[in-house]
Image (cartoon, rainbow, N blue to C red; front, top):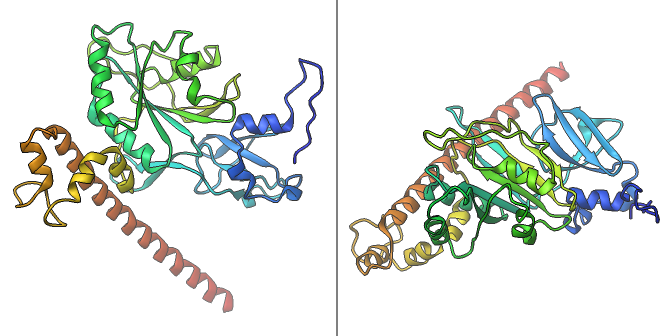
Length: 354
């Protein structure tokens, strides 16, 4: 165990154990380490990722180090003081990722070791059920608890309609409506923001993610901007993902708005998000049923009886097809990179023998 340096002085800095707990250190991580080695290789968490550097924090440790390959915000390392690049990446209990925007077909890591993903949408023209379904599926796949948070209720004429649309997405997902600037946010989100928990605010620009983080922190340290009144669209205020430690001992990740969210490797997440449709699918006559005009289609039968919403079914099929395609593309890319790396190692090996 790490030494406890606390004493009766109320102004004393938190103990090493408390600092690690507030950063999100848990039993899952303890089980991966040898306590006797922690003095030499202390655990640290990546709280920011820059182009060439990482910001890490641990017990009585806060510094910048050179970038490491394959890491993201929220990752835990056993920090090698003598050789930073040899620091050990601990196994993640959760990982949120997506297919990166653009045409290079890469995989982008969003955040690791989250407990809860607050999927934020405002009660205005920017509200989209299809977008929320994407985020929910991504969170489910990552083994992260999704919670839909609806903001700007003070500006909406009919908050109930937005709540109803969000609740239909999945009976397994809680929906919370709030004013991001209200002090009640602390109470509204308290269930998921206990000490030692790590939460993230995900969603489009301008929905109030940074405002929510500021309200939880009790200050305005994170810059915010107003949305455009013409279309309720927001501007990018947060330019990088950053983990903030709240006074309550909860770690909060503020993220930039994502204009494009391409899903990959989320088949289980889609099954959980659309659990009712997935269950119906198992009763179709043919295993490869496209749920269109095939005989014995359980999904079409449910539509005919009024038990399935057609637009929702169409969104589900679209996401399933997108996931299959992106998963295939990224798998092929990984195989090419693996083959390329193997060839490079072979060339280097033979060159050393000469």
